[in-house]
Length: 230
Image 1 (cartoon, rainbow, N blue to C red):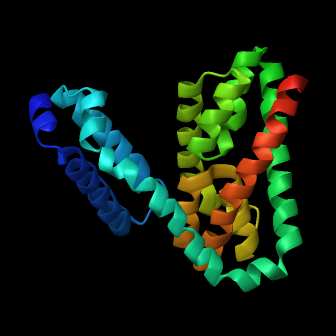
Image 2 (cartoon, rainbow, N blue to C red):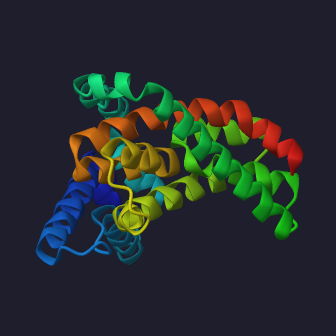
């Protein structure tokens, strides 16, 4: 099977897309928050690679075209943001303050957790970028002396968690304003959370898209300061 993946350059793409389509179909049928297409796809792919004895490098090479499309897809997030430009203008100050508050809360709780668990500087540097998008978080972790590979894993886990519980959590704390919901989800759980935000509505998705970029900038500036506090 590994040789087949190596000879057929797009087989990894086909398997990944098929797993995601199947997971999405299952979500529509069961309509339950825990039936998360992203999480199911990851689990299915891990089991498939394990049972088929295919190493990750072979799979990644076969599915590399999916990574190529990450950049243009990210750029496309600007389209709904442009369509909701009026909402952005009306709430600009509140949005920026909300994102800043979310970043400060995330960094502060991370430092407190690190102190409580007696983590060293390397471990804290690994944890601090967990709520920002992978490309920014990877570079930030490396610059601060963290374990970059582990930071990426934590970023993915954070995003999946936000995608799983974001809708329920917003209902629990009674956040009904679409701008506030989008800002909260995007700031806390980056791209995977934004996928949920778009399911909730165009405004939520647009504000979540904006929050990814702004939260990334705030985190890059503030994380080294919080690292010193740890």
